[in-house]
Image (cartoon, rainbow, N blue to C red; front, side, top):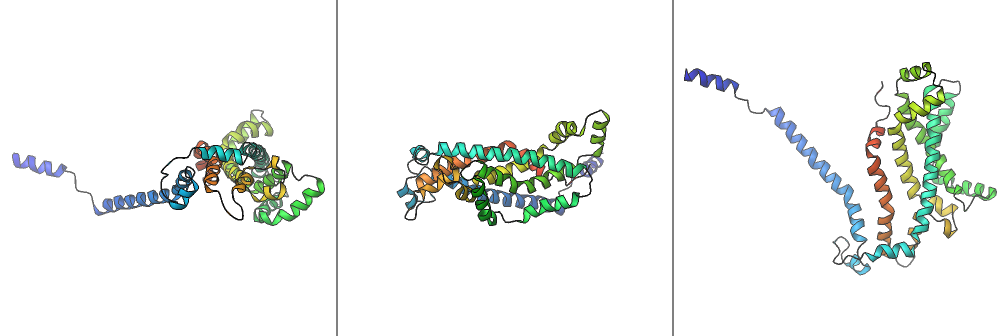
Length: 295
């Protein structure tokens, strides 16, 4: 009887994991190690920027990669005052959000038309927008400068808002159009049967459903507008209209660079971009695969 019970226990004893299971576990562990190293390499420059913002200039030259011996909090107030960052922050906010709203509104409406309607010149219109993605942005600085000088648009907010919107529209339209194309046609038919027109369908259904794609476009556009230096340098010369990247350039001259103020100002400038990404990161991840799954 005891022998039978021992045999039954051995039959029900879980078998040791096989080679395939061990290989899967080893591969997962190696992947986690690689991802951890990648995250460290990616985040370390940001960490280095923030710790460098608390150093004095002599300590930065002596120990560029070390933790500060003394934390100089006054670096941030000095940078804010010297560069007049309050004015430049305001100008960057005005230009960035105005261009962002125009990009999202015009891009969403154009994407809706191209994704839901069939008309004769549809391919030609899409080709024109695609051509906009192939033009090098900085090659247009000289002709844009001449055009804006003739129409009196230099040294205004619109000198930055209009080019920002124009060059970001192509990407906005194609990303949003890919997402809108994946939305089932049955939703549109049901809305039209219920008496909702195309404008109501666009406002009540398509825009809420397309939030992941719009969030992706918004994040990419925000980063480009907020960090732009070339357009602001060429089109803006009045100190009262300078954006944040222009104000940061004043800490470096042809003879020396004030690193303590430079890093402090950069730390203040990068905070809005980090905050925006953290707030919308879930929508961005969904928008990155926009249009990859139908139905």
